Length: 136
Image (cartoon, rainbow, N blue to C red; front, side, top):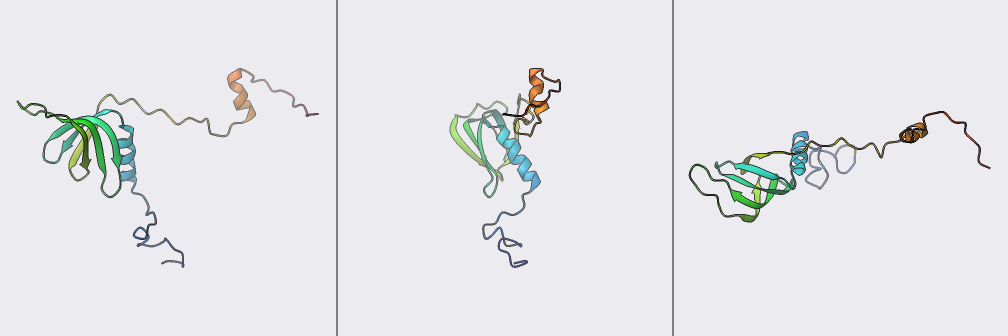
């Protein structure tokens, strides 16, 4: 332990402390989370291609994704596989996840940001300076 404080040092994660996050893993999880509810195509390391409704992703241990109503995409003259109600694919098994027609992300709302009185009054067209009146 460093400095006599618990939860610091190289073994902190083994004791349950949160290690610093890997920014690339955080970005991947964010992008995967944005795909929830959309149809995605997943290419596995063995060459199989699956398509289904992206349901969830998990970052516990290795990343995994869950597809609902997944089906194997036919390659060549093959037929499409039977639909699988729920399919969990582990990160070590997939090489690529792709989706089409995903709407762009909207910028964060500034509704929670601090605003001055003038900024609050602006949408109502009250941009003139007014004299403050003391309460009685």
